[in-house]
Length: 300
Ligand code: GUN
Image (cartoon, rainbow, N blue to C red; front, side, top):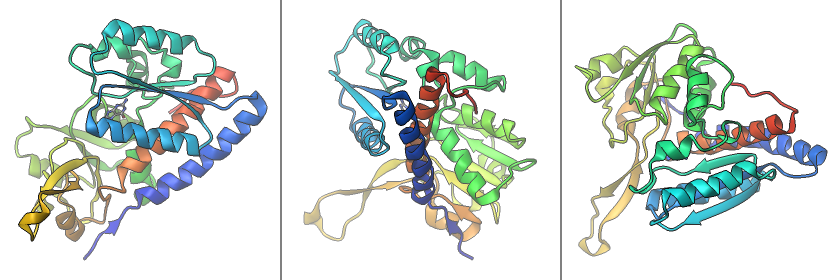
């Protein structure tokens, strides 16, 4: 049996088409496009690629982007001053500070400085608390995309046995909360979980977000399960020719070929969760813009 490969690019394209229409309608009625400010501090290679992709898609959707590239030695005070300006800028509806930040900057002080209504990442403690208590909130983009992908295969998630591997603030924790709101039965597994393979094998729906290349093997997966792989890991690929030098490729946190032999459906890496994260970021920006214009409600 071979599983279905879940097409994150196609699902993201359909969400982006809706966002483009929303943006056009907003721009026509408000006389300005929605605006998203993206701040990148330093030159982390992966972050630079992520930010470039986010900015490109922002422009493609008709959203105005405000790019702020700051040097690696930027002070916390300098970054907080920029955020304060952006909080007051009426053309800016969403503010995103790409993580991780350099060591001299305390990320928690930065995230709490972003106006909660412009917090399109959903990382401000107020939005974290609102989601945790099931109230309307700005919700982190990757977990939102993960739930969209799962529902594209399974429809309703009510009553499903779900395992989330990973407990990060960016993915694992908010994802578990969103799934709880979908009435799933949720277990969070992590590096301290005993016999993690058996725990994963209980899952009808398995999410993996640990940043460990191909951690989840075929035998960890329940036959017929749906697997959503959040990992993006660059690994060295063995080459036939010495002279070709080391080549790299991207793999997920799940051993994809093994998973495809056991599961019902699996997200590929790349082309699974990644495109959905950006599509959800643009939807969140649109939601923030409507909220600030008084024409929309914040909502999960
Ligand atoms: N770094 C890794 N994922 C994310 C994300 O979703 N948002 C931000 N701001 N930084 C990240």
